[in-house]
Image (cartoon, rainbow, N blue to C red):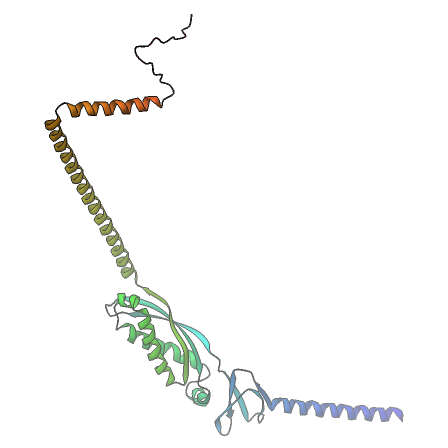
Length: 276
């Protein structure tokens, strides 16, 4: 008797647990979460993609009939490398870094016309198109000297082009800009030639300065010779004697400073201690 009652009790608990599990599964399948910075588009099997965009939080849907498609609406970076040609037909390798995000209220149209991988389908093609058009307006030298202008024009044209696909570009910047091997070698040869020209100009200027110094020195020697000749004509041998006295005074001064020289005055008896 007791065993029969217990069996029925366990059977009832099992049925209740099964019912709760089925009910929990149904409820769980009818709920979906949208994380921060994301939005959801609802696809209905009978009515298609819904125009309403679902925001952040937990939401209900009809199981099997409706399906949520989650989109990341935060700014995301993407690098797009492009090889194109400049106005003077030089090969240019450019890498463009883009910060992009979709327009929230256009997510249903983006999902319907492009798909979930809209960035893979849209950004490489429009970036290549815009870069080729902008770079073709500038010479290779202008791409270097007017890089800010090039970047601004690329940003303006690309932002306008991306808006037609429902995309917002928060930032567009040129992160890499190089030229072909031939152009790089030509630039290096030009720099070497400029350095050689600067070196040759320095040598010429140095020689000219040395020439001017030699001329000035020769003119000074000539003027000194004229002055000495004039003095000899006026003073005769007196100038020569004066120069002798000045030279003797200088020699005596130098000798007096030497420790190895002893001065013996003339006309006086000097006792020297000579060895025996």
